[in-house]
Amino acid sequence: MITKNIKNIIRQYANLAIIIMLAALIVLMSSTCCFPIEKKAKETRANKESDKIAETVNRDLVGSNTGFALKILKELSNESETSNVFISPISISLSAAIAYNGAKNNTANEIAETFEFKDYNIDEFNISFKNLLLSMRDIDEMVKLHTANSIWFEKDFVIKESFTDTVENSYSASIFNKDFKKAETVNEINSWVSNTTEQKITKVIDKQALSDSVMILISAIYFKGQWKEKFKEENTKEDDFFLMDESIKKVQMMQITR
Image: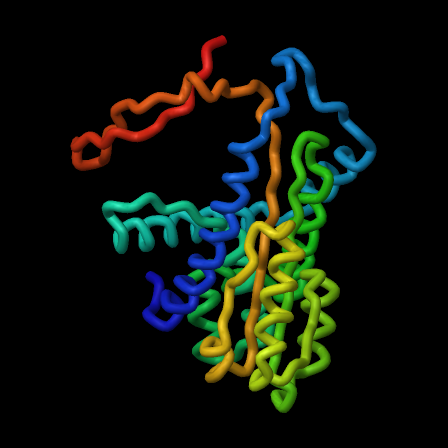
């Protein structure tokens, strides 16, 4: 069960994740490079290293992340039954994992329950997330994928050094201590996101969002992939899409013939 407080937090992360992943999809759809079916991506030393690191990730934690992804997809789908839902669950999970390291009591319990974190030793938990992030690097020479995490906190707000050490080491998070009352702080946050997403996302926050905040966590993913086989634009046609309630919508569908 997802509590109301956690659901509100998730919704904020989900909105950012939706924007980021839609931008990634646009990059993917606009790719014009084509690779023959029989051509396999050359396995580099970096690929092998990523595979080795992936093997060290706690499989139960991977299962927990998958379970959460299905749970939040269901929640968001129920709230927008007539719209498509496209999210990046790993962005939400990473932000929650960072927050979990600084949470206590009821807040920690709610995060652990919602994201299925409660069964893990915190050190093993952080190592697994660190290795998960490392395993996502250089996974395929036809794919550009990178993640970035950051924490922005109000200049008068005190956070423990042990917390910042953990998130820097395990989540490669950048830490920023800023005056939330200054307009340039909003610009700096948006610039960080813009640079992280190759200028696909240029604005995620405004001054109002900072007015009643003391800390902001941001997890961004940039993905650019090339189709193994090219989809010809002239083959994209309107066709029937069947919904769960058996109704039909006309949508543009990409098509390919082998």
